[in-house]
View 1 (cartoon, rainbow, N blue to C red):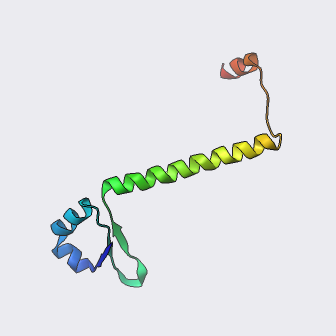
View 2 (cartoon, helix red, strand yellow):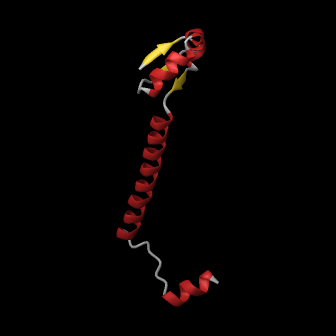
View 3 (cartoon, rainbow, N blue to C red):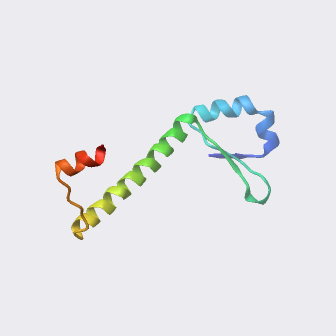
Length: 85
């Protein structure tokens, strides 16, 4: 990970973008800690996938807890078919 100033990013945009594609993450430092992170699309997609997986696993954990606590609803196949209509 490297940190650069906005002027350095602007002046060396292509070189820094090439480094990002090669796996480097760049922090563009800005006033008042309102920094910007530049990363590859692949790295961003991996982070999004991990976040989505974590949310999905959390839902599964809550469902297991509800099942263990007996908080279930039982429906017959006919009731489910009627609900679908």
